Image (spheres, rainbow, N blue to C red):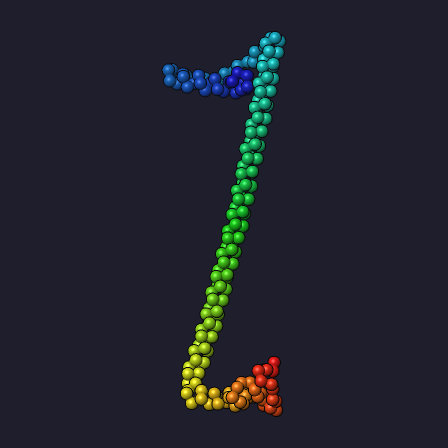
Length: 186
C-alpha cells in the first residue's frame, strides 16, 4: 500500500480515521490529511529497486508460465475436439458401411428367395408335366392300343427268318439271300 498505492494513501487514511472518530467521538470531522512522501536513502532505494526488479522478473516468469500453460490447455482442448470430430466422422462412416452391408444382405436374401421360388416353380411345373404325361399315357396305353403297337412293330421289322433252323435263310426286306448253315451275316 505504501509503495504501490501511495497516491491514494491520503483518502484511505482519512476514511479509516473518520470511521473510528465517528464511533468514539461523534461530531468531530476530519477535513484533510496529507502524507508527504519520505526521502529514501540511496542504499535502501537501490535495494528496493533490486527487490522490485526481482519481483517484476518473477511476475514475468509467472505470466509466461501461465501463458504456456493456457496454450498447452488450448492445444490439448483443440486436439481433444479434433479427436472427437474424427471419432464422430469415423462412427458415421462405420454406420454408413453397416447400413450398406445390411442393404446388400437384404438384397442377397431377396435374390436367394426369388431363385428358390423360381426353382420350386420349375420343379413343380416339371412334376405337373410328368404327372399329366403319366395320366395321358395311362389313358393312351390301353390293351387294344398296346396290341396295335405290337402289330405295327412286327410289321416294321424288316428282318425275316425262314426255315427250321435259324439262321439258314436271311431276308432283310429287299432280297432273300441263301447263306451257308451256321453263318450269320454281320
